Image (cartoon, rainbow, N blue to C red; front, side, top):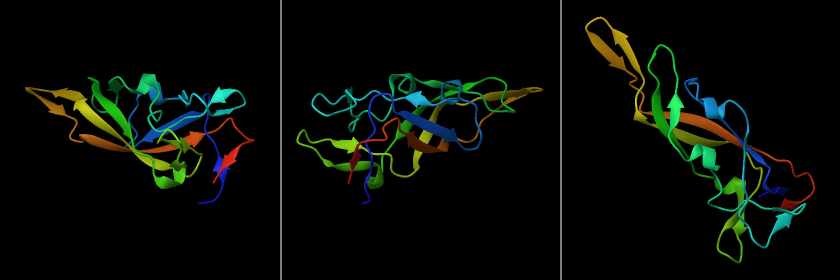
Length: 144
């Protein structure tokens, strides 16, 4: 694995949902919160396995996708591939590195709805794929 920059608190995650659903919390970059207690970059804790989802992404999110006028809700999940993390550290968790874009999922809990005369059509796509990537504010410390 080539060397790449560590992700620390203040680094960001960007998610793009397909098909192009509008999830208001995902409109911009979302800051990550590192939980390392002994590894820092620029005095900020590095992000370890388990820090993939910032708190704002842990709660159910609204899914606003035309033509469904009644929003649905769903949850985001992320599984990091090997190119986005280091080998395990002493505490048994890997450190995040910028790496390459990776896949995430948006799983509907309640589908959006489109009322039509005498009926309602619901969003038939229960699982929406997403492209995710880390955006780093660290340009000094690399792992690999």
